[in-house]
Length: 66
Length: 226
Image (tube, rainbow over all chains, first blue to last red; front, side, top):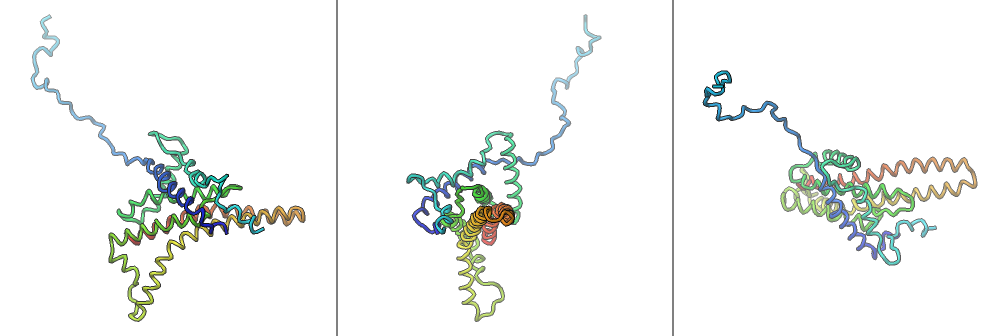
């Protein structure tokens, strides 16, 4: 039975170790499974506008001295 | 006749160069590496299959056992693809070689046993003595359990070798019989041809099943030991 000829055993086992533990694992480790997407808030928060704290007369267009 | 039948199992050497290295590494070409954010259809299908298989297979393991996910997935891909490619005519199937299967089975089994010894020493030693055994039977039972532990890697390797080799031999023999019968009686040749078709379908199933069984048993040994 040719499988019991031990002269070729070392090269077969060596090539299997390279393939299984190096090549295949490098390929499978690059598989990327995306995570569950989280729902984001559509409504945007109120923007911080410090210039609205003080309302000045110039914002009324009809009162502009033109 | 005998030499011809087993000649497909000789490790291929071409002009002194061991091309068995190329043949063992060939199935990895069938699985391209994903390099992009959105990959092509082949890679996406393979990735989906790997995800399906890994969810099924790693469900029984705890955190410690799930670190073996990469190993188990590449194992099932390697054995499955090698077995399926071996069904092509005139191809060499590396998993028919006892050397390769022993080289896979012994380190993986030893890894699971050593993991069990390191992290759960008492529990892994306790596997040797089932509960509620009568006192006089204890020495004999420990011997039996030790033998059954050490036979696990041998059984893994020989099971895979024997199944794939026997399938290939049957295909050779029945194919040869069909050819020889064609000149004698066409009807009998049709019958043997039907048998050949059924056998080939069986061999496709066996190729995948053997990969699954090997990986499942390794994961079972892992489960015992984590």
